[in-house]
Length: 217
Image 1 (cartoon, rainbow, N blue to C red):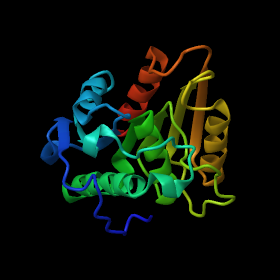
Image 2: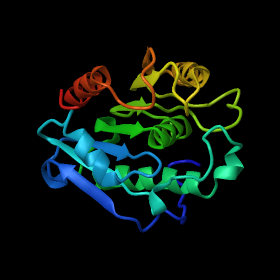
Image 3: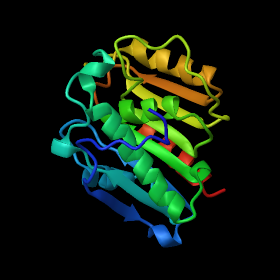
């Protein structure tokens, strides 16, 4: 899917939850994608840990709280139409920011778990310069990753944070995701945390906080 596509799927028509600085007054925006069984509002609450004045928060909500039904390691077609509909939800949120005169270069994507997989996939499938990507406990979607992801991310800053023993995210997929995004000219920072489990830690939140601050520079 490309950013120009117009998908009408299960997540279209769902609420876009907002927070932070009002979009009309914001200089930058963060698009937040939640995990399986979670909510957009929960992501807005998590963003309190790294929000800066001047940054709008935009969190799409997945239908039935799930972006796609199966593991992100399943063949891509088994996660349709949810995957494509979720990618469209990110496109729609970015376009909301663009309409408010916030350029995509000042829009950052932050996702956790299933939302981190979706945000990673979005960047790889829609290459250009973004304000950043923070994929917390996630990676690119698919049973096998494509040999080549064409396009240039123009040194978009990317942070991949995950446990080395995450029950849902194999360490190898984090390494492979980093390699793909680096091959697309992203500026990737990867951190694997020993024995953490499936969650977000203070070091990750501090790194994301610095990335959000950089949006305003």
